[in-house]
Image (cartoon, rainbow, N blue to C red; front, side, top):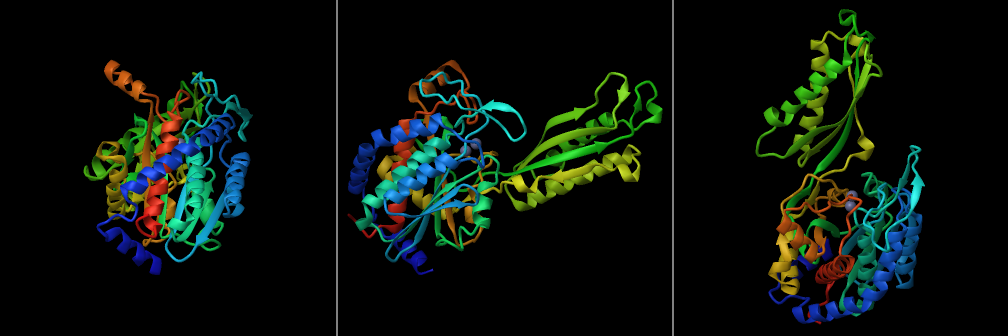
Length: 443
Ligand SMILES: [Zn+2]
Ligand SMILES: [Zn+2]
């Protein structure tokens, strides 16, 4: 708690502890690192690894941190890396990068494109790509580690840097926490991260006070019927008709039961049933994604899905022993990401002093998911912030706007961020914020 109050006091002083003059110095140090960081980026980009399999990537982060004098522990929550640098009294600040790639076959056509192919645990052969830009996250993480180690005389406190596995499966943050991230290692008062952004120009920084990303739940519904001949429906209970009614009724959850002022999504992304024209199947399967910000709305949606499925089955005359089975995939639940509002505003104001007003912009929340939110939810006293760093090359952004073209999103096989801009901006922004929280005073 002591460090907490020290830091709040530091934030409140009018002369910034990390002044624009030192911001210039930091920018110079980032630029010196860029050739080496870009070599690491190209290696990570060409060698992406799927969730839970980030062994090589974790090894690169661990080796870099060890060289810099961090105390490094590997295999925390699967392939997770925890690197700790204790440097006197002061707050504990945690900086996180996620490490996993996606089962996407890269189609950017760029010289350094990933050619990696794997067969997944489900037996599907696929390309692997850093289509979410986690390679830029890992590279900037190394940049931050180097700059914090090189500037040890300017800060005091404990820096915890983590490489997190399996973000894309919504599992890695939980696995690290369950493996003692906050008990075996110093528990942070501040947690920081960034995500590259596919919707705004390279080098811009976006921030969202409060809810920034959504609760994400995956729900499966097994709709049971009574199968039979397609010509004799009176002798069956048709699960396709019932599942269709369920899909229709689910649309009323958000439109009729949730306040228009709350955000929520219920999407049925998959509907499978039947095998032949003239057979009434005995089951249908639905897969849903369910999004919200607050726990109250989330509970209402999940309860409502179960209620609607059962209610429609009763209305269809399904026997009691063949009621729908609704399964919420609890292991892959991603809780909403909440940026501590006052802390976010303070950090944004600080970033504006070094990057300028036009490069640091407030962004609306999105219904995407990101399990970074878990690190701040563990304890209400933890101040948490994830910022966006734009990755669209400026020329590409301008051309798309002019031609009314949509840009490739994150997870697209065509997503090709301006990596030098993302990495240099993120390295500088994360280092500057960390220094601001732990800085010894004007340098
Ligand atoms: Zn992603
Ligand atoms: Zn991501």
